[in-house]
Length: 307
Image (cartoon, rainbow, N blue to C red; front, side, top):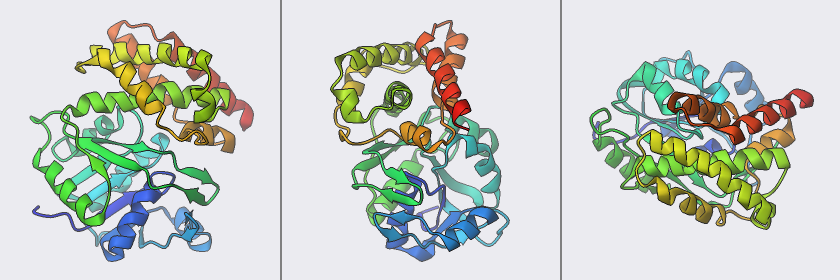
């Protein structure tokens, strides 16, 4: 492939809608948004509203066989990942690049079990949280897609340039760090520590930033991630907590983490991707993860009593 032209987006929630809207405005004919029949009817009757504007996309069902994507962006919740892996099958060709914007450090590994690592860079979204209230999504435009190759022996490094060229054309902000694995785990550290604790305590970023007691706890949670990251082969882990704290203070005070928004709306959280993965990796490496075990238990209780 010499150029990315056709894009498929899976998931138009708080993150997916940002990029679906951006690409749709650039060239609506080159974009398809994957939905099932239930969501198709729902969005036709009541479209998502992004920054006050109804989102109108060219939707496509998993059964369609007349569209092959050069780039697939996955932006669903973690509990929908297995369905997406199955549902994109008709749209994947030999050189289709797959970017997963899911939080965590495991989604690419899961996707690669079916489609292989050759065209799967590791990636994530970092920026101000989009605020989601029912069908209404608001975002101030501050954010980047961060992507790169985890292992050049497994993934085609030329895919990075193809995605960069496409994002430049569309106007999507991005970063390609020299040490992508370090950056990847740094975002995970921020999510594991602030997303989960904010959802339990019902705190905005500003409330978290203004509490010394909270920050003391935050660093203890980050320390668990730091130990696991080092065991997983991440370099320069001694710098990670200070780096994560700097990013934490850049978040807008009135903003809420995606997990807090899920809890407030009574939606299932992504605790398995955060605390669940941490506990599994802790067992793998013989590293205790008591903070993550407590947060996992508490978030599961919160969801149980909200149903």
